[in-house]
Image (cartoon, rainbow, N blue to C red; front, side, top):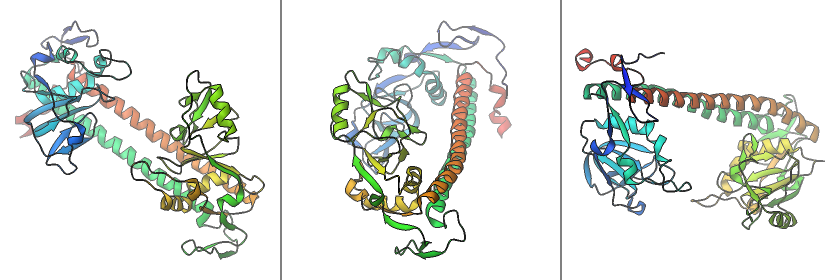
Length: 431
């Protein structure tokens, strides 16, 4: 959909803003509202507090105090949320000492200012940060931020348009997220079906009791044994911090293990001396090993296919299959099945940072067909799971494009690049 433009424009004299509609005014933020910071700290949050408590993230906490009761736009004053986290609220609230609140609006409505700042403030916020590593805002930067201000009636129309279009696109994004959830669930069901629930790939295979009450029967020629029985090595990674100065060799942790494989580009790197020490302690995986995450996101696995030399952190476990008995790809899919995941979940300890010990992983058992059947099942799943993964990627891409469109449309509306006044019915028309 294409949008109309205003009849005439003028130079704003603000580099990032460019041209603005001729009848709009460019005003510094300090003339449009009062700018204040809170007095509370994160520890003041109360889980079931009576009032919203705005902190430096998208998550709104709760608290039992309320220092203000008004319309406000709030933003993070430091941390990762600088220039990105914005809230609009009207009513009683409290806020963190490193959160800025814009209140007592003059010549601008809060909802318009919220959309304007959310879509544009980041363009100058990070450039004026106190540090490049820990971004923070200083009051002069905020006070002197330029706002293109249309007449009040236009602000109302633009804010309503931004709310409406944002809600439409957000609904589409949620649909894509729900699709991803369904695809992930179906993916796991397909894996579980092939490696466990059915008779593998032979629907006519004779069955036997598995010896596990809730598992029922399995193909007669399959084995129900502990995973450790079919592996030559199961060990975790380094329990020491890597020496990263002059880092050369990849040091892989849980965060670097993804559905696509190992993120060697984004991982830490350790020095030659540190690497050689870690190799001696057994922290170097080989091609064909399975990396199993035991901290944080527990149970994520990947088959090592890259021949480069690297070592792993203690958050990962190396599982080395005995390839005379166990196909690495089959073990990878078995670990993703509901059968193994349910066992792993029952052994997980820790509320803050969940962990699975090697001792408990050694207690996990699986159902194993002969090696040639393992290879067939793994090949079958590789093709089928790949299709699901591609669909998930397409949905992820769609979400990114929708969010880009949302930001572009709203930014264009609040800066006057498009004229949306005729797209919003007036109060009389709505009645």
